[in-house]
Amino acid sequence: MPTAPQSPADQLPPEPAPPSGRARAARLLAWVVTVGLMLFLLRRLDRHQLATAFTQAHGWTLPVGFLALVAIYLCDSFAMWKTFNWFAAPLTLRETLLVRGATYLLAVVNYNLGQGAIIYFLNRTRGLALLRGAATVLLIMGINMLVLLSLTTLGVLVGGPSDLFRQLRIVLIVAYAGLAVYVALVAIKPRFLASRPLFDVLLNASLTDYLKAFLIRLPHTASLIALNLAFFWGFDIQVPLHQAVALLPLVFFVGVLPISVQGLGTSQVALIYFFSSYVTPASAAEARIVAASLTQQAAGLVFQLALGALCLRSGVGRAVTAKPASPPARTSPPVSPAP
Image 1 (cartoon, one colour):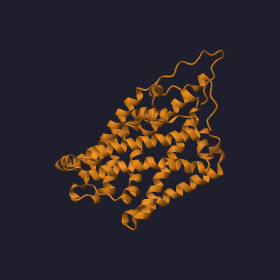
Image 2: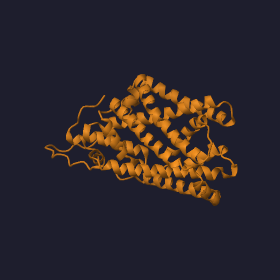
Image 3: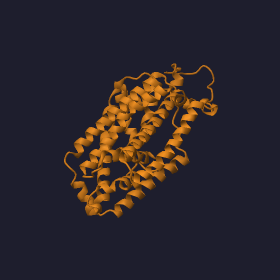
Image 4: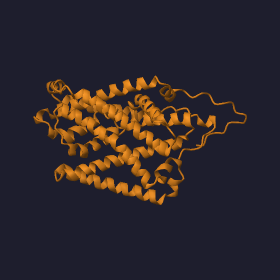
């Protein structure tokens, strides 16, 4: 349920604090991991095979890939529109499309950073409490993980026995054990969590709420799988659908870990590990997978930058990045923020 409007001064988001030494070190480490993995892959690959892989993709690969990127944008925006309306504040579909498109420039750096910009937009235009917005984003992140877990489970069940799927079953057992702990916490609502507004949406959403949020997120994840399959098949990497459904969620998870820049390097290593057996001849597997993956990421980057620049030209888009106005003069001494 949307929160009550705040006073004009309270609606203003706090000035962002300069990055701490730990944050700067984490960012530097991400670049080190990215550069190190890419250099490792480029030195390992045959350059002629890599160049050949780039030139032998089917002509339909990029057009179909861009259609999949449009589908991802529309499905993601639709899911966020419904979820924020259910748990945060009223938002029109048009606003969501423009805001989400504008935040794609931020999502180039980090997906969740783009969602954070939506929170600030709602704070400025709807008076939404920042913690309530953050709690809604936390729910979206949890639902994303649940969707990936469910799809991997479906792929394992359909895929039948194999060494790889037996390994995945162990991963799934651990994942479902963690899910059981989470369900128990939601049912018990321990005071140390219930007293924190950040966990308000997670703890108070009903089973029906979770089911709705889950179902509305499925098309977005399906479109992500379709994008990867488009580039797989466009580069003659013949991955069966059930294998893609089972394994790509793990690649998505690796790609969003904050240990590399935009998942570059880590995603390629994961793709090679899971899908190199679907390339013939085997000697060209790594080169073809890396070529397909880098082409996909380049296409995604171009799409995000173009869409972000276009949406930023709208009034809604400008509101996302506009600096807040100065708060009205106070007649009483300012209250120090809580630590």
